[in-house]
Length: 295
Image (cartoon, rainbow, N blue to C red; front, side):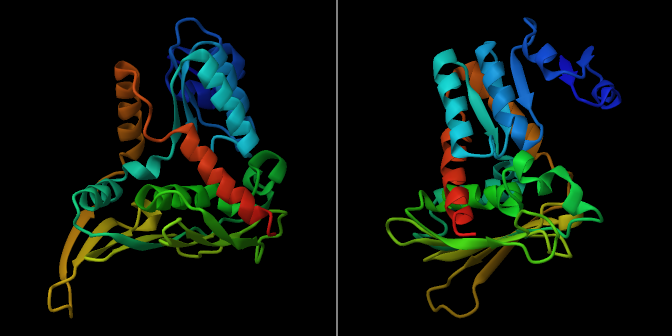
């Protein structure tokens, strides 16, 4: 095990036997099989490509790059290396999202109609000076930061989007990137996703509602400052009227990163394509780029 961080003290804090302030020292080691790339957006593709060229499997954090072109470079390196790459869309592995996917797959919602999602935080003093507000490093603002999670989840529940509408705006933070984005996405069969992401959400918020012809699912909270993670199942009755309601709450600590990494270990053991793929990241960033083109 090894860790690289530009802050030597933070690298040592991980407790790895080997640490460095240069990621190249870790990527090139012969005793390392898997690289986790968790850095600013501007370095994600560069480090991932170098790791693949060194024969490593890679878990690269979302959004996997600032542009679709950067993700395409990782795809090319993956295909040449024969190694596996998973993208860190960890929200798929929150307990409420796993249960929601199970209910959808077993037919509890009936045919899907549309999705409504909101996700946001309120920033902090000096937020406009952080790396996320520097487009050269981040590739954009709130849309490429939290927005990619909502887009990825909407794709997971509805499928590919053939029509992309919306816009990104800067309303509050004095920065050259967006602090709010509004999306209306449609699949080829006219199922829709209405999504809003914001860094002017003064009380942190996560809400995802899934509407089927037989029932609705509502996911609220992610734990911590976002509130207790909760899944509510509203089952439509034959006579309609008030639905039959079932609630699952998950007050325990978030284990989505552990579940995600464990699944990646299984991907490698079984030599199977990861569920959260570079193709998913590429499809997500295609949507982001279309929205940014409207700015």
